[in-house]
Image (cartoon, helix red, strand yellow):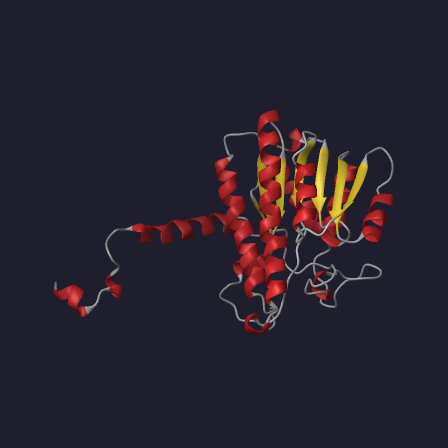
Length: 277
């Protein structure tokens, strides 16, 4: 599908730094007009200023955890000119679950789950009607780390749960729209060289853009992989995954688990009484 590259208006959330700012940069090079959304007006203005001429760039300052802001962004995403939605905004809320601030956990769910779901729902009808469009949802490899304890990974029960939702949501939605020209992708980066780990999400990182000490893959590589995978029609993009068949094996493992829909109880769950009867 590489020859089928399209342009139009792309909406990018969380566009003030890191992966979101890199989506803005690479989409601008491809000729997309842009609507950039984030909480930090100064950072958004700086990103827009360096994108250059030849495209239209609009910025919207919004916190997707706030209902009024989400409504404003939803109204923009639902407009006819939007042919690409990049749901990149996210916060981590890292910390031991039992000690976490309930308000922060609610915010993680609002930003990481509610907002991208609502925005995708607003974008898809118009994309389907016009016969072209795409939605990219940014998840994380932590979506697949549920069985692993923290250290060296972060305490992440809610964050990983939200990213697991995004993977399942995207894959299921992709199957639902498979007979239409609309493409849906979930990109699952590993550790990325951004400032994401510098704040749990109560407030955005202030000052100049920084990179956390652990380093990681450059965001430019994450976005290049995502856009290349979108051109190729890949639903699940893992930028650092060398063994592409791992995604196929995941689907096979899921099919094996779905064999549990048998109406007969599995032998290991039968009590002695059940066996005797």
